[in-house]
Length: 320
Image (cartoon, rainbow, N blue to C red; front, side):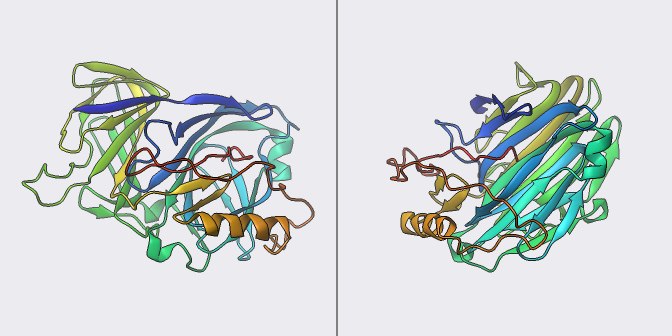
């Protein structure tokens, strides 16, 4: 039933902690999900720096930002300037290249407050890796919800349970937010082969944001990802009030990750490195005074250990 359990690795990014879940050395991707961070939870004092991520580049992926608490101001070089708040989605497609920043608005910074959310990177299929960059902000109305008997579910992206979210996903995937009261039972979208060979997703996982859940005869707590076997059809029981992110989809093939770049081809990663270092990638108009420089690290890929493995990883210099 359970293929693997991944514990989030807590990282202190200068007074702000994240839990890094993907990529993991033994499991680099789940469907097209190639990176997953839990941001916080944190409580910022009035006047504290909070989120202050200088402009930086991406290629070959879409980023999905989703908050439980707090607010982040996004700016990018497509001209988008957009605050994201709890229950909303910022979906940014880098394609052939985008530059963005993520900061706390000065007024919000002056008052302080909580910050808690998730950011996922979704690898684009090869035919979409070089599309034009774009940005979409989706309010709560673009995400189907369901509520009954102590279960609240929001389809953040993709397709599941007969519904489709508004985010412009490029490959088959799903991303669901559950809020579970104690004792509530529910199930993830079906796996491949679970419906007699028709439908279902090849790869699925659950991430416990808070609380405690039971999967089969095992108990899992906050900060743990449970990767399910393809044909497993488990019932999930909340042992206490819990928040869970459920995700998965179809693999898009091996990918190389280097810093903030994701691509199927090493030469394209090298070109992106050169472009950023030479200043050939435009900064956001409203945030063009500073930027994160290219890390000084080699980029030769490691042998891929599995069908969904990525290459060498240089840690992103930003928390989300």
